[in-house]
Image 1 (cartoon, rainbow, N blue to C red):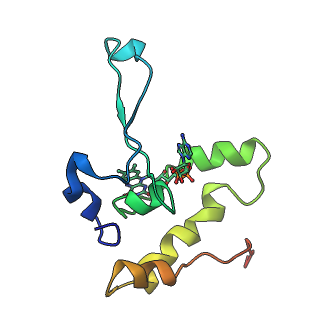
Image 2: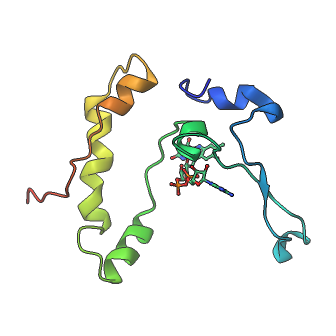
Image 3: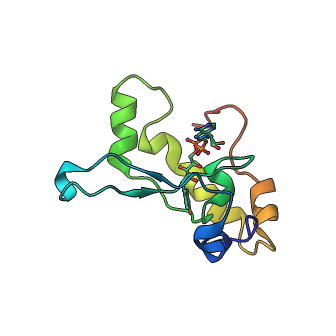
Length: 111
Ligand SMILES: Cc1cc2nc3c(=O)[nH]c(=O)nc-3n(C[C@H](O)[C@H](O)[C@H](O)COP(=O)(O)OP(=O)(O)OC[C@H]3O[C@@H](n4cnc5c(N)ncnc54)[C@H](O)[C@@H]3O)c2cc1C
């Protein structure tokens, strides 16, 4: 179930692979504590995540670039977001998708 996209959810509350943390009481949520699942196994939360892919928010990346992080503007990272869509049209398994990472080991500039 750890290897199947969204499979972790089917393990329910009894799984040993979850630290099952709670936040401190949240002032803006009526002082409720929030359930905070975290991976308790090799690979951490990446091993229990749903393997859903979401493109990041442009303003976050541009802000990180403004703070001095070269190569992190949205224009810089957009091609990395686009590359999986072009190369993973028909993944046969989650493992195959992971093994074909679109990211180079070091950032490269092509333009
Ligand atoms: C249920 C779930 C679903 C998710 N789904 C998605 C998704 O679909 N797509 C997506 O992009 N992201 C998803 N995420 C988020 C993503 O998995 C995490 O943001 C990412 O894995 C965090 O990586 P990290 O290295 O910062 O932390 P982690 O991978 O959590 O690494 C922290 C490490 O510290 C260890 N640790 C924690 N507490 C202790 C302790 N007290 N003592 C010793 N070791 C400890 C943990 O076991 C773990 O190995 C999901 C997360 C969860 C929990």
